Image (cartoon, rainbow, N blue to C red):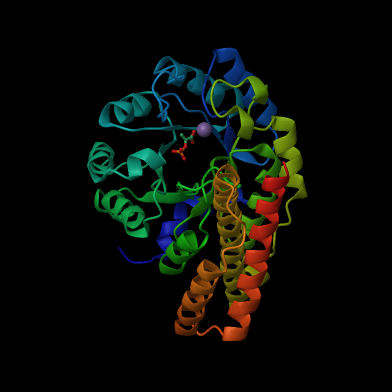
Length: 360
Ligand code: PEP
Ligand code: MN
């Protein structure tokens, strides 16, 4: 597959002077809930109403979606509000049911994108379709798997394709539910500048207080749209309660976003600078995560030392660490002076942590 301006055709057809907005609850819960949210979003920047009908849950026993009855509620949303409708499909049967109920946009979830079998099954079921099909990134940070999914759709002659960036799973905890790893969608965007790219800040953040910030960042990186989970009573939502926002707050969020004009968006200097800044920000936040995790390990060591009544400072061990870091640093072009400064500061922080543990 090659970049081609036709890839943007379906997005251009919306004729918007703002980013494309997809909003609605994580899950359809009841007909009343679905319709209430949709009516509150009717006269806003939202073009497409989302609701999960079949919910892929990490653990069994959680709410797994209302099933196909929810498709009737979505059809009612379209009739009553004129919004287009979208839901997640994860197999050929979902596709059939969604098409039978005239769902306009189908999205493939992160847990499906990891499986070439599933993506192929969905691509086959959608062969030659005129519907819009959006592919979320796989849960693991693997660009070629994401790209492979796009190719499968493209090869099935699906003409209206877009991608959704929803962040990536990590083993260590960060402030995000799914780490954005912005360099991955940026790389995809540089290969396919015309492939519509949508950000899902809800699943990146996992918490509503940083959705605005991440939405703005996505727009600064030239994303074409946002998918934001929106619920009439977010705190009591049956899934993803912590990350959903009310329709009123979604409208405020959209109003507060700074949308850059086209000439600025096309300036390659600004793009390059912004992309590099993203890499620096990513690296800095990784440094913080690593330092935080290192101090946690220090705390554990402090607890053991306390129990065994061992002195905090063990200078031979410290000397070994420094030597190793100086030679490792050299290989990466970092001066001895810099390594000494950094590791002395880290070491001092560890000692402070362990002293606190001994005191308490
Ligand atoms: C969702 O959009 O509700 C969802 C399940 O998303 P993801 O596939 O990104 O986890
Ligand atoms: Mn969700």
